[in-house]
Length: 324
Ligand code: GLU
Image (cartoon, rainbow, N blue to C red; front, side, top):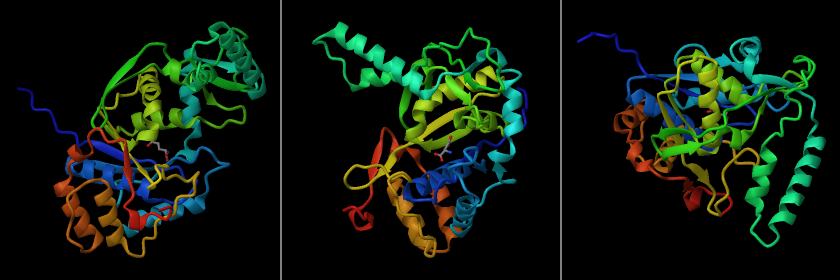
């Protein structure tokens, strides 16, 4: 038998610094850390700050400090996407180029088009159910008005044609998934007119270039995964071996914890209590209260994804939920 050198699996935490860590993002960080370490792998830290209008260094510095306080130390150097824009543009003008085209449709033009289409559909379907989901479906697909217009690439937004077939992948937490990237995202805007790179494009290229093998992240990003698989493939980058989409942490009223609805930032002055709570939310065996690094060591040794299988939401315990 061939004796191949064993390559350690590689995982990552990839926060967008549009706010501080909250219990939802902390559980994502902790789960991806413990899981990849339990496999003997490396855990990378990538700051996804391509959206310069919404991201700030103040938040990225706070995120890094919080991770340090919690003893979750990353392997290698931190990667900042804001410093890698040339790399994403290189892909857009090489391997991805045949799939891209310039587009001048404004949001307003598209809104108008979609509204017209929806009215036509509603008239045609009369009493049939044409509900909010159908409307959403119509909205997401760009009607490809500019595909043959040959517009200059640099002076317009650049769209990327995503494939129109179902892509399947086995999710280690949510089970088998199928999605058609064209139906989910249409021809996605890969680069805005102001040069801003789409985050799923940047994430795909970086995951490929950084050799990431295991992606564990929040369930809110699962709808993007079929697009990510097709981008990696089109860019000739290695495929991700294992996907895991974690249940979302919710308030007692069912609302997802997020920066948009002002989830409270974590307070790392008592890191042991935070690790205990995050492990409880992740349905792991409790660990002895100790220093963060000893607690993490025990959490890694005990790590088990099985407790999360099929779970989509996890409610905060009442005493920690400010909305309760
Ligand atoms: N940057 C994304 C976020 O903070 C995560 C992207 C990913 O993990 O692929 O929500």
